Image (cartoon, rainbow, N blue to C red; front, side):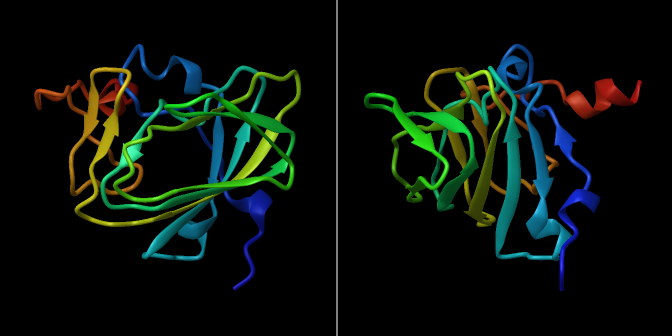
Length: 162
């Protein structure tokens, strides 16, 4: 089934609680995998304008992730020295590897990145730099973030509905 990419509505911003959402507020994701009704893995077209981050630095217990830079330049931030990824470069993140990662756009031009990740129901997401945790059983786009001690953050969707 052909996907008309421009017809897939962009999801702008982040469901991270404040203040962790700030570097991700201008990012845009087009959920291409959802548009094709894929259930075993997700595929996103990520647009990062200047200064935007893909996410907070994180790692997954059960899901693999892969990124391929289509346009522009991003900085891959991990536990070790940051690495520059340019159009044609790729990176992968194995489930269970505790090397937290994210992409940041430190240039004056937009970057386009193809993101692919497995969807594992028992997956948990750890954020090593901040007091944030994503427990298992979350569905894409319907995340309930908690503090590391398990206390839930207020749901941003409830605030948006008011």
